[in-house]
Length: 472
Image (cartoon, rainbow, N blue to C red; front, side, top):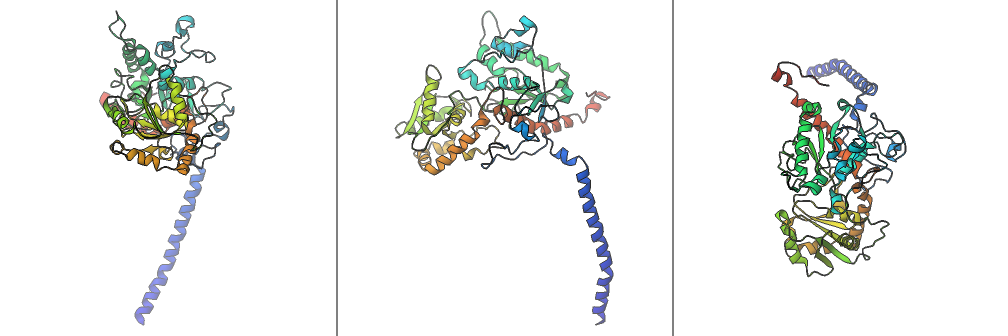
């Protein structure tokens, strides 16, 4: 009995102490809550360049964009509210490179005629058509930056050009590298070097002398090299920069990789399917492919699949090119097909995927090494069929998968294609959530990683020189 009383007394003596700690803890929690509300920490956490953006959902309304980074509703809907450095998602400093690096490649003679570096945007030089267009990404991004500070600009406030590089999140290099390769990669006698090679050498010299490059080691520079063969001579020298590419098929891992660089969609070359009212039954071709069948490297699978599928009912698998009426034929074929094959060629990617998206033809992707644009926010499995190359080459496997997808599932994927196709459209002026704006947002999401690398690279800057290095 005495022991029980002793235990009870001990419990009673500790009760005030327990209550005291409870009161103190509660006070601390409430104080911290009010502190957070009174400081700028929430604003910092919601800053465009730091926000973890959410994936696009099937339930998103047309007027919403679920991973917008702080833009107000007026900007999201494309109204005329002025875009400033305060409300833009990403601030971009663009070098005033001589015209020979950009619009001069379109035969624009601005420097010679008027001393201007950039053309009047009311008279934009025409970009070459055909297959040249599929790699024209730097053209659209440059136009968007040039127009970003128009007083009456309408549209999204995503990227804005700034005059002072110290205020910028990234440094954009406006070299039309794909056009340079397509038009000027051949040596013209009596010259010993191609114009494309000379421009790359001149670009390396230009950048290496710039304070902006020296400050960051080039890590915050953005260079577009969308054609797989563009920047062949300069890519190793400029490897610290962020590249905007079609894929990594012809790049060493230490030069380009998914952590550092950005994958951008090709510009589709076939006609968009406007006012598409297709049904499962109204598209008579089950599976469609038209293009080069005999390719090198990973493209060997095309000829293997050709022999497997050439006698299949409702399958169109034929050679085709962009010459003559080839593009029109491909447009008609894809618009009439339920599924469109996207098979690895000389590189993991091809424009055929984006032609299929524009046609609302369900892409069937057979390319094990492919990287896809903005896949961190778009789930391609909602509107694409993915097959491993080893499985696709098994006799009958591919057709069993395709024929197992019925009308209900196909219609769901077709509707999703119509919802997301705007994210793959290049246009000027750019529109909310189109390809131009999607690319800028991917770049913006990489800014924190760039800053981390730049800051870590400065840790021992004083010890190397014995004095502080001036930083603007």
